[in-house]
Image 1 (cartoon, rainbow, N blue to C red):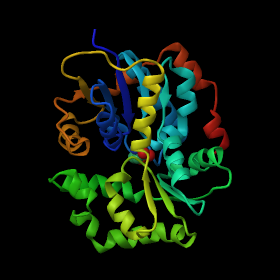
Image 2 (cartoon, rainbow, N blue to C red):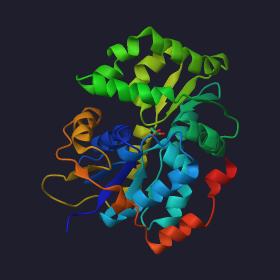
Image 3 (cartoon, rainbow, N blue to C red):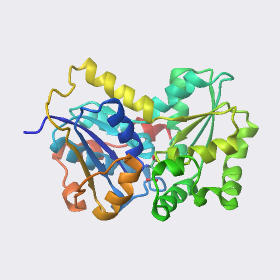
Length: 307
Ligand code: DGL
């Protein structure tokens, strides 16, 4: 049997920004990544529906012999982190708390901005996470759903290394219409004088140069990927679960959507070739264990109850 892997999932490609950081910090750890591209985007969906996706994908990952699950999607973390922590027998980490922690550490004027999908922002998950860490920090939020489409469009149109997107060299990002939209979204946060901005969506690190340009050099741009990878490493260390395997590390990538496109675009986001991408049909995910079905039907979790 393969040694236990770190399970990671997202609604699609964006979570590969988190997987990439985990692979950088923990190069010897086997990974299993699932991108639910067939049902992407999660951002505009009802949180109850997203909760079901989280339970389905977490159950699938558990069946793949994982020792820890990372919900590398802000919307899914906002919808169902505590539910997932109740349902699964392995530790489950999300991306909201690590991003909130990085912002609390970075802010000097105690005014933090957060941008994300409609689902993430409306859930209030970031405001709660920041308040739990430091009740004196004020959070200003803005839903910026069009940024997800812009990243998707940029990835599909561009062929160069993803670093070009990060450096805002792609024409998708230097088009005046992008900056007009970005100013509409971000001006209210600037007017509120935030000195740190959390990129509360896994797609947004790919826009960080352009977002930073609009926010100005004084504002710290925070992506939760690094902080999440650090938390994964700490959790494995605490549990004495670092991989002991010798030989080449196994990294598996799977999608519910088109494997060829996932391999092409995902290799650019991950920063190295994904290799052959596995197909996971939705019917395979939709079969839930009786205990997972029971947990889902038990009603709203603490996240949605507070939303
Ligand atoms: N991965 C999602 C997130 O981080 C963004 C894309 C989507 O809407 O599914 O919120």
